[in-house]
Length: 278
Ligand code: KIV
Ligand code: NA
Image (cartoon, rainbow, N blue to C red; front, top):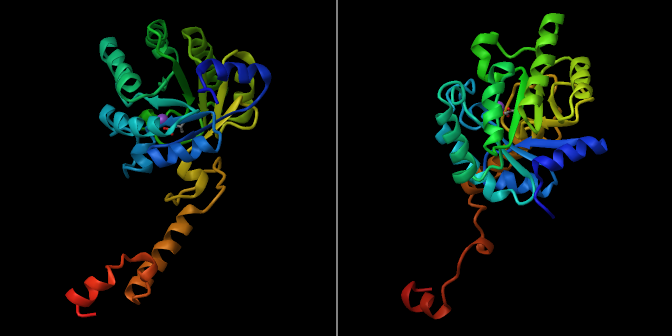
């Protein structure tokens, strides 16, 4: 099967076929979600919260992103790998942004980067796309601005806020993004934006009428996180299965029921007889 590209996503929108995206932060997860047939794997900076235990995405560094992107890229045979540019790596010098993209694509093995924000970063995105860097946008709830937003809440509810997000989406499209994540916005707003622009929208907490959907892997499989936002659907309870499995292992070791001969290596009988007095 051919590698999914930014162009594939645009074609999916044209054909009215929903795009599927899920996060992954390591090699085995990338392999599994790739095997499951997902179109896009996002190495989200949500890794800061989900696998590093921070309480926001702010502390995530470019080195963190590189480390995880490399692992994911090794496991993703077919899916397009998109990597988040971390907090404050695309608002200062453009050379620094360019170098961050170079590292994620060249060293990390990602095929695209994702940036949070609208009109204020459209100029930066235009220069990146002109340099041949495929860019995914991200509007609505943009977690890197959590200190400014005052928490993780639905965005674009009033008319002024909705108009701003619509204008942002158009600015990102004009700047050359190949897709836009819409996070935690009213379904009607996401539907309207999806109709107004040619590039695909990928929703998370943005209703059913986006051109695609994205979920955090650990939320989707029920692995680790206790907080369940309204927009999450848990398709499995992996965390439960992990606790049950490890609990059983602990019990069997304590009761000397594991390992048995089946899980042990045997010496030659002659050696046993001569050396161990068997
Ligand atoms: O970091 C992330 O997981 C994301 C998705 C929620 C879109 O940016
Ligand atoms: Na992110």
